[in-house]
Length: 119
Image 1 (cartoon, rainbow, N blue to C red):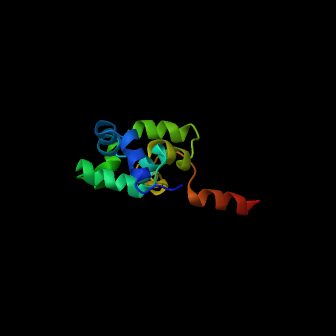
Image 2: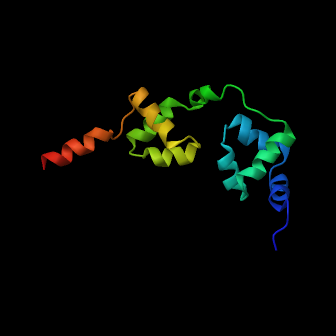
């Protein structure tokens, strides 16, 4: 039977203040990622954000926290943007953007089509 507030109680039990702060403020994990990690819905995580009084400042500079040398090595090793996005918690678009902006190795969108049309 469904119980009102059960997801919030599970979220509180799984995410004490210090653990939630590490995920949300230090690792910049998204609320969606945290919810999936704990096994509750995103609304329950939003309740914790309000209860714990946590907000992130400077969200736009988050991409600066990724080690570009590590990202370059991973792309050179053949890892896909999708794999790296899942591992780092960044969006697929952000990983692709960083690849283009910093000229990281890897497949480019136009390169595949140009090669296949020559055959």
